[in-house]
Length: 244
Ligand SMILES: CC(C)(COP(=O)(O)OP(=O)(O)OC[C@H]1O[C@@H](n2cnc3c(N)ncnc32)[C@H](O)[C@@H]1OP(=O)(O)O)[C@@H](O)C(=O)NCCC(=O)NCCS
Image (spheres, rainbow, N blue to C red):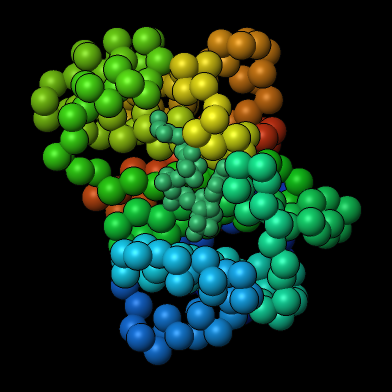
């Protein structure tokens, strides 16, 4: 997969043509974590300090510090200067227009990896999950997936079900995160295809069949232990992959 992911360039500018996907390991040294912490605002530091679990504290500081550095690099601004706002359902946003289009981004972390998607002018959501085996796949599918998705998952063997389950999960999460409504959004209101090898991921929006046409749902290929998906408003853009 290393051919897909490129080293961080010295200079990169955001554009409506490209969705930039950044990946980083959460396994950083104390010194590197302190450098991330130094970029955070007082309200972000207060939020970090509310995490009781050390891993969650680290995850938040690293991914927020990285987000600031990526925005700083691509917008030519000091990373500490950004002021994030939050939607009603806590989606972090920037009230910032660049080259005539809003700056949009979304973050996801799982186990040892963080993914950050950044672009101009496209609403988006990203989700990464470590593929675990210790999950009650069928029970969770009945609870969270649409009837169509749960039926499709039933066709998988025991060996095939973990990747199919997490493909469906990340596609759903990415779409929900793009919409920004979080858990309040009805997960039964739309269906995605479950096949992890399917590069043309299908999206069906049950509340309005036309709505699906406004979106692109894509697999993001990362390490074999993980599955990731990206939902983007619109079509015709290209994806660039960066290792931070
Ligand atoms: C936040 C939420 C949207 C995603 O959480 P998650 O998968 O546990 O966590 P991820 O690592 O993928 O994403 C967390 C990041 O998403 C961003 N985020 C927070 N709320 C968000 C929202 N409403 N919409 C989009 N992004 C959001 C934040 O940047 C957050 O990272 P940060 O806290 O470091 O800033 C989750 O609370 C949620 O509501 N999920 C959808 C409901 C569900 O149960 N889905 C089941 C799958 S089928």
